[in-house]
Length: 145
Image (cartoon, rainbow, N blue to C red):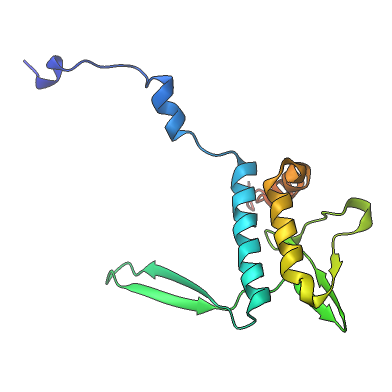
């Protein structure tokens, strides 16, 4: 007699437990990623010497290696005018539609402009623009397929 015969089996999990395991939609993931990148850009605007610190574990030795890098800025300053070009997947988001993709501001107000962009990303207004960016960022078919 098998030990497993004493157990009670089910074909699927109840809906309550499956809901906790549900994956996020691509749009929600894109919003989180863009919001995190805007936080990095705000920190960079406030402190030009800001560096990102990332850590990873080496496969063989198991050591944790930390690396620092300076993030690429979205801000271009020319004289007393600053242009902010928000990016997703290293491509400029056309957030202004026909008005243009670049946000014009002053160098002193760059952090406030980025905070306003973050608020826009977290609202539902950004859904259409981010959906287009997600579609554009998807990998194409591999060669030979």
